[in-house]
Image 1 (cartoon, rainbow, N blue to C red):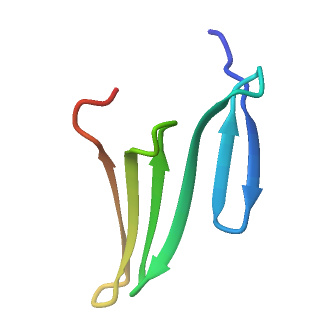
Image 2: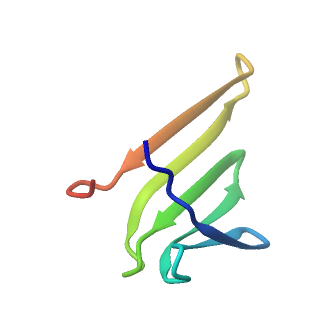
Length: 74
């Protein structure tokens, strides 16, 4: 199995990912709003390709995680 190597640049709530040739690959940002944490992963055209949401359910003390893949993307 081949390994992929990426360079990651992190600043506050943003990540920028570069491939081995220092070529921009994709970026991510996350935020917290109303008890829900959301992360969005964008491609080089600044389109959302993944959206990850973590929400705390106050009634029973559970965390709910959802991963959404944009239709038509691999």
